[in-house]
Length: 148
Image (tube, rainbow, N blue to C red; front, top):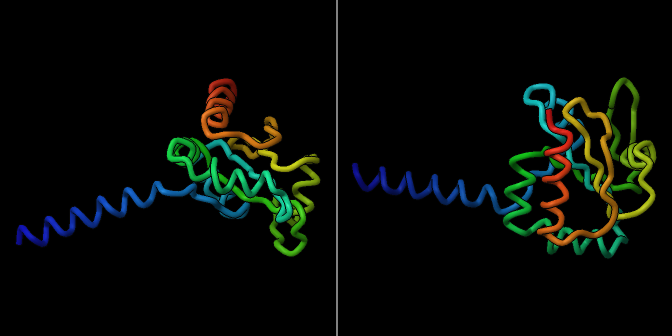
């Protein structure tokens, strides 16, 4: 019996450590529902497939353990492809593609990080590539400034 308990606890701890190995990326639709149930600020990563700095963010910054932990704890994270016309969703009674939403958010460069409050109002943008520590620092400053 003790062996099963040890195996179970070990499996749970491995699963918990694996859960923090990547940022929890959601769709816009998922975030709309999540924010209604449990209000949290939203981090929208607006990117394009051809953007080299966007790929560098994915490879280096978004794999950093400190960034992963901070984003998962404090934000609902959304990836938004600024050139995707196919993925459609309804936001505030209007249908948007990812491209339409990026345009509505007035994103003009990539990567760009749009910060929204729990009511899904745009607060600000953080344009450009960010290394892990400066990225967490910028997010932390914003959270301190705008969090209820």
